Length: 441
Image: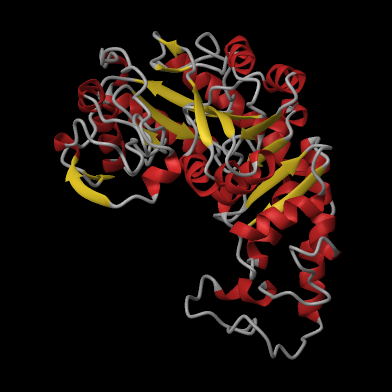
């Protein structure tokens, strides 16, 4: 593999067998779970030889710099709190507090939490609905442009690309028009960390990009990255990131980021290209989202089917666990860790279930956007009551009402739960007995 400055520093320091009279408590010797014990020797705290995530020096900084180069960005900050930490940090940097934000309606819940924490006012960007595919399409640059013309006070735009279904937006085109209006483009690329290694270099046009390495690369859970363009210094990333991250970040998570990049630059690219070819064959063999529906992540397989929830259960009964399901889709995440046997096992299960004979169901059109009554901050910090969703008509949501995954809210905090929204949730198979928080009367 290529250079791994953080891993090398941790390994070298551990090899000196230092007397570890500091955190963590396992002292690099033993963890109660035998499968984890071998990794304990590299799990350090902030010391001279190991570096400090929030100081911007040493082997961590060297490893971040290599990641920034791999992504075509100016700066990178390691995140040990997943892309949630990244989205909170990115919106803090781009928008600050008490400002309007043009927000992709399909944003992850962490972006909605940032609205409340930072007292941001959302102007929601609705993507076009792809009737034949049953999913939302890419963000339309013309629609974004019109929003910014109507509201010149908007200086932050937040887009998700790829979506949970693998739909990609044209980041360079969006960045160009946002910059033309004097704004900053934030991209939630949590599911797209592998894309630059496949030649998709569009993220480099954005101002801030959040990527979850653990979702699509061989990295430990919660290992993520925040990238920045020329408009943000590494010091600014560290200051904002420290607001939401632990002062004792995991060195194992950061070392796994170091190793994942080095491996992707070596063996991983080839492994991923093979995976993409195998996904293409699956798309040809089964009804699925394809590039004819929208620009897609080559490695994501989204099956079109009737009653995706039932199909998910049938697959799990055969030991096959997809990422998620909705009424008309089942989503499978393939990565460089998946080999020929994994593809063959899924295909065999799909043949046994006869998915080809299950056409998608008509669940009707999406409901109109809910009425915004309170700001996200007012709603999230208000006194609340807990009611069954079926009894919530006419109430103000104090939480997101969103099938999760993918966590796209039908109703967001501060919005009115209307009859059409409840009917839509019923139609897509949402549990109407689930309890939700609403603003107290």
